[in-house]
Length: 245
Image (cartoon, rainbow, N blue to C red; front, top):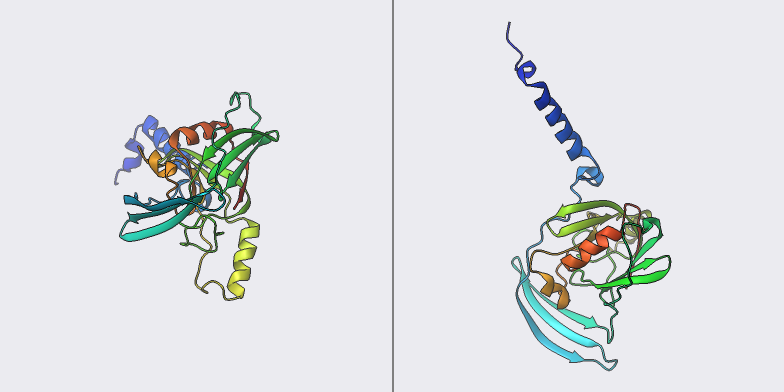
């Protein structure tokens, strides 16, 4: 009779294997549909140049940036408001903060993310998006950030972009809008709505991309690493997020 080698595995090793499998299957590591709660790897922008920078009639800074991402050369125009609010720091203890009372407001037009606690603004961080920040997301691959109401459904403290907080995109509202656009022929019949949208940091020593407002993401919201690490302590699964232009 052939010996069954499974019975020769020490019991403690069997237990270790069991717990490893259970951990990988948990919501702390895996997001919806069995995907890791982290965005896909995005090539780091290189050869970044500011082609032009000037003030418009309203006093906003208009910056034309060109860079390479992968094999693609990207030229984008960034309009930075005259006085974007990015330095609000109200003393708060994240350990005693009621995370159900936290609201995140993402302002794509002013390149910032605001944190409200019980309707009071306690933080404001500089944020960047994709190459077309003022456009609402239509379909997978358009690199646009969706607008509307969302919530955090997963948190990953070990993302390739420091921290990652996954949003429940596509929401029911986003799905209805996508189906309507497809029915009207405004998106290709084979198009997909996309997913894996969230709030995250950036690669090591990449904060300069945030300062220059380079739209390097595929539709996610990116902060400086020190900011995403602080924001991570303020939020929980279920924290509400409102994204607007």
